[in-house]
Image (cartoon, rainbow, N blue to C red; front, side):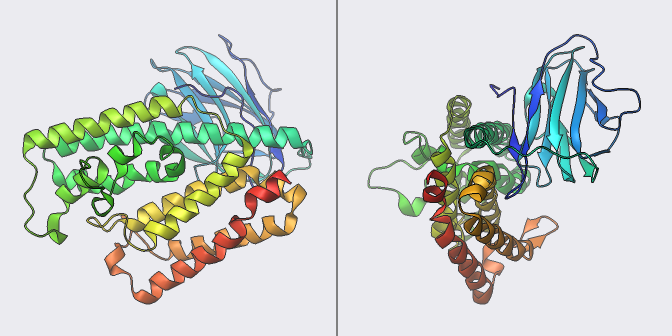
Length: 391
């Protein structure tokens, strides 16, 4: 993966900017004095991601990341939701130690090592406690803009990588005829597509092949991609459906995987402007309004709420990225958007099950309307985000 080697992130509206850096070395750097609670070590192997402590006081925290495995690895400090990147260090080769330093406020976080630099990594909870050390707040607008742009690029790259890993697994199960396992993985794999859907859709040659719904096909257009495989796995709602033959399964599965590999190669090279980050947040919520809350996206599997949550995840990450800039320009809008995102998330959390979410056809009309109303309530202020950020 091609990643940024220095990430600075702002976690919450009005929150402080976090500065992180990584410098390669071949031996432990001794990033702090003995007994320094902010100087931590990380042991990354193929099977484990072991930190010397699971909490540290707020302030400048250093992680000495040592790769004791045989694959190149990377280490992340993520926000509590496990999505937003606070700081990262990449390309840590076997027997190499690299430092990561970040100015981190109190709160709950997630740490992750990624052996082979693929997948969602080996994760654990990490807590930053209150302290007397003041966490520096950046007030430089150019720095906030660059932070938002770099962070969003890293987020898109990470989600694309996870999409590719899950798609490989899904296609292998589907082509082998392991339908129960493929059905169980389907919604989870597509989550990574939905979190970056507006970016993926920008490739007009790939999006129709990968994500076209049957109802939206144009005359003469061949149907391929995720939703064709979805129908083949959940044919119960189809009339007179003939299952795909094993050879056809292989053809369509291989095509989906090849397109995902092409998409990942393109996404790893992308950069973003701050208006693209803000517009991406708005666009993802529009995806919710036009496909997910209506139950049109996953017509066969009825897994629309997984997609719904993923679109909201991506929209929230984009908003949180520009929130410190918005706070300095329009604090009232920043507060309103935070409140509306939180209200929508409460409703979504109410639909969770042990396996993910309830299926769309299990929702009552009242529940659908509540979700729709919350989406609409968020859509109006979110439509003003880009103009406010660029003001």
